[in-house]
View 1 (cartoon, rainbow, N blue to C red):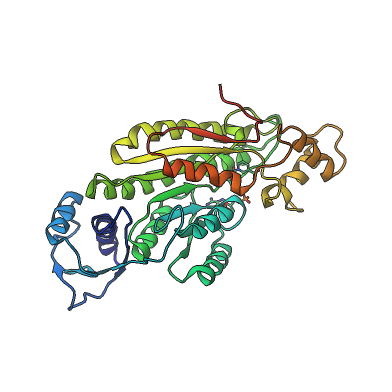
View 2 (cartoon, rainbow, N blue to C red; view 1 turned 45 degrees about the horizontal axis):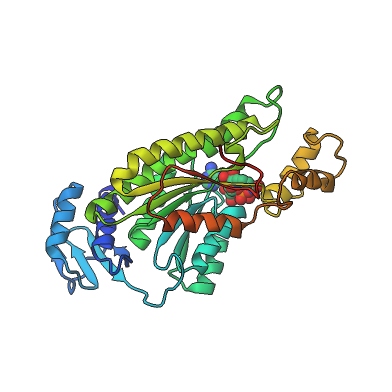
Length: 358
Ligand SMILES: NC(=O)c1ccc[n+]([C@@H]2O[C@H](COP(=O)([O-])OP(=O)(O)OC[C@H]3O[C@@H](n4cnc5c(N)ncnc54)[C@H](O)[C@@H]3O)[C@@H](O)[C@H]2O)c1
């Protein structure tokens, strides 16, 4: 696809989606470069401004199942009346979805009727996991995309792929995150920069790209609302001993959330963070080679700990509810944020009582 066609698709497909919505549920809008001679046809000037695209589409509405755009291609609208669940019919992108929280969030959203996009720098594993979801729920219901959240061009290319396949999206979950725990006295500068690039800058870049599409959908239909949700951490709310690079990047993420929220209200986008406690069962903690239990044992972060079990017990004892955070705990916050229509810019703790707001 040429850059010019991609530009046109990115401004036409999201607008068609929301203009064709029934009972607030948008169809999938799938693009193909062939101009279908049987479909109703419209003409737009090359790289037309959003307002012109929306006006021309409004004149062409109501749509049949296909709409051809002269010199661009054909947009097919696809409805699935059988979807059920708390996010039925929504298209939701989750970054860092090849494993851990991101994967389990995507799996839970798919079970609740969403079309899910598994975006990850580990494209092979994301593809493997998306294939499992497609086998379980149907070939339209999941897609994998390669995305490096620290690289603007990679994010733009990935979002273009989503628009070509689904037509747009309704929520963006910025979950990709990394952690390298070490004392400020010894941590190499490159490790600090790595955490900052993924956890802080990555969230900024993803919001920059995603918000343009979500804003366009709101422009086409002012009643349309969407969500950006950052998976932050309890370490975004209180400092973390010998873990400053991570905590600093997460504190910064909350500053971004509050600022994005203020700015993007006019585009119908709610922006919130979720601050989970420790997910002991996930690979970040439990990976036997480089998980946090092993890292913390090696770096002596837990005084007197001699085994991984000692480290785990130390962390569980810090939680008033005496257990780690799980994906169902996080999903309760995800659905709250998507369903409520009167809150933005918040950081919602999900910590078993470990962190309390003041
Ligand atoms: N695990 C926890 O205890 C815990 C607690 C609170 C918050 N969190 C947050 O939850 C999120 C997910 O954590 P997790 O434990 O599931 O992590 P994880 O390490 O298990 O998975 C992270 C995923 O992000 C991907 N990723 C890394 N860098 C990327 C990049 N540049 N671009 C795209 N993808 C990239 C990885 O390939 C991986 O699939 C993170 O933001 C983390 O800070 C985790």
